[in-house]
Length: 487
Ligand SMILES: Cc1cc2nc3c(=O)[nH]c(=O)nc-3n(C[C@H](O)[C@H](O)[C@H](O)COP(=O)(O)OP(=O)(O)OC[C@H]3O[C@@H](n4cnc5c(N)ncnc54)[C@H](O)[C@@H]3O)c2cc1C
Image (cartoon, rainbow, N blue to C red; front, side, top):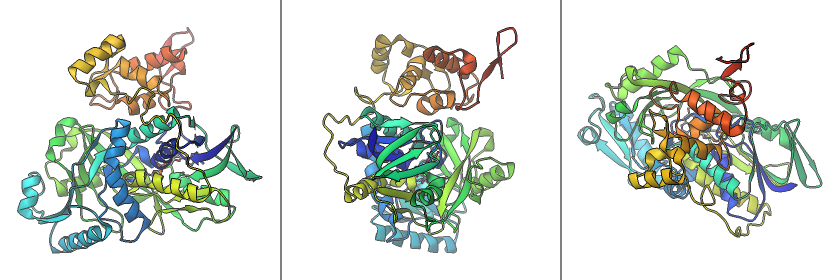
């Protein structure tokens, strides 16, 4: 088969582009190197839908951020993804920071960000009573929000798959050849043929662009790691919105924010690193706790339940580079999609589709287009259902009556839904990202064996074939006597 479009990389940029193309009568394939959608920066970031005051006016980033932020609520509603417009403050500590707030305010006005206001110390404290007493003012952006980044990417990919897109996981594209206007992209085993390619490979996007184009891509990517701590839900009440310090040349600084699932998030720092070095360090954790304390002194490390790190694809040009290839017809590169790449993603996808159309892709609306994740609508997690919905779910599928993850109230029915979804969960982490089983205070201590047993049953394999995150990440091994033992 020859697809109309091959998207390389299933982060938020690739997944949202696949979703945007799903509305049209064209065939789409998505190749993702990792074992799941959202394997790169999309899996590990601050999850903020930035308002758009930070970007320099006139840049591609500024335009796509403000439009993406305005589109986000509608996109999330269409896909049944939780989203909260909680607003954000950039907090100033003294005159120098207040000067920065005025610069950001002016940028925001130029970018068309709605509702920006500079608040006095008292106005800030009234809205955020736990903010540091040293804070002197803030820039309030009511249009900023929060969303689950990997949840949104999974939902977008499911919607694309429901409308016929082929999703190839564990498929790192290593070569791309062209013959008579058809590209053949291969990971060494599978060959995917397509008339057009969209390169959404995140931190590897410039390298991939050079490989496809046959000449060095003019933008250089500097990988930059950001570490985080996730705090228990009982700690989330210290803030009502997202609090940032004044930004510096390294980025937006260490924030204190709620997540859309009700936890508290602190981080990230910013350090140059190898493209795959997402290690969390003791020094890094100390640095982010210091940053969090500067904003909200009562944040306590004792509430930490887990840590993680993500890698930014920072371009040396400080702007997104989303444009057609200069040497290959039908190829669009999305390079340097650093923050606010999540916030921008609905607008980025729209823009990429417009570039494909300008390249000659015919955009006829798809007959029988399904706007949701499944043909019968969007799934709802048991934890989010009303009592009536829970009763109906259990009547329909008794597995909804069996709790698997106590911390996050995840049922066997939720897990089955994820295992049988259009982009099926095939390992423990895929289940976790789709259902939150294992994301609570005990971090999977109670539910992991049950979830693994369910995966084995549904896949028709023995427990020793079940992995945590693909590859050789098995959970148990078989003993000489045939019994299964924990690895
Ligand atoms: C620490 C941190 C904090 C951030 N905070 C925010 C925030 O609060 N708000 C915001 O808007 N943005 C934020 N961002 C930026 C945002 O996360 C990114 O802009 C966005 O996730 C980029 O998505 P993407 O799809 O372009 O890239 P990625 O998510 O990196 O996806 C690229 C995908 O391509 C795959 N891939 C790579 N090479 C190949 C290949 N050869 N073949 C097949 N697949 C390949 C990778 O496995 C990966 O899954 C943050 C980023 C970081 C790291």
